[in-house]
Length: 377
Image (tube, rainbow, N blue to C red; front, side, top):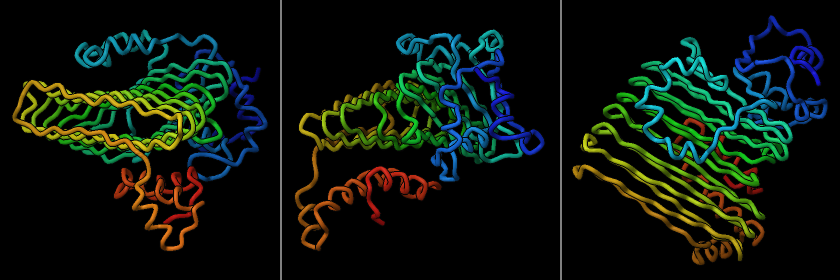
């Protein structure tokens, strides 16, 4: 078993003066490197299309590796504690942070506008780190979060992001197709302060079992939280999306746009709820799931919910589940589009909608095209 220093010496050489790489989770020098071995150094795939996967680890500001002594954190227990335990008990600001070996407190650097965090799970390991990222007031930043998951690994980190007043934060959640072989269960919790804007963006495919839990707190007036997601499921893959959006301040807004396609015998489950407490006056909340059932045995289950304590607001939610529109199929075929290209083109348009007009529109469109095997423009 290699030490951390030996690994970097062997594959990266002595680059200590080139760039500082921080490993805040070091409890011992030894890690399980079944995933980070010579084969990794020769693979030409990473989320940013820059070359070898090793670049992902090197270019990340923080790398969190799974380890054998990782403490198990029950997802069901978190379900019971959320939503008010962490926020209203001031969990972040108590001494318990220092006592928790799996909790890492990260302050976004003043001199940077991007940050990259990578979670890597080796074969048969458990990844349950808890990370709190604080973005100061009046900032515009992007946070890239990568997941590299080997066979039979269980990845269930908790990622907390707090946006200071008047800040704009984009969280980009990426799972490279060749490193999505484990069970991936991330939990995101966002806190938006006054006039801040936070968004979570992701498009995933090929994950055997994926459970994404998202909890948003609109804590400041005129704050906004945005959720833009796409899930492409094949074979026997399953995805659970669990969303809770808490409007705690007046004039706050939220938007959820979720797209999912299920091929073969895959399954998509959506459980989403919008809460508006008695102080949340003049809010606007929108939630929409659109699903495409494309396999004879595929399934999509949806449960959108509203819980409102104050009625001077605008909230809407909806679900649309079906197959391809016959008129759209006829339109493309009548204009000479080959049958093998018709379905990828329609799916491309279906998945592209949530990511239009974003700063990273080209990034997500490229990923959608690759996943669907289409060169549509």
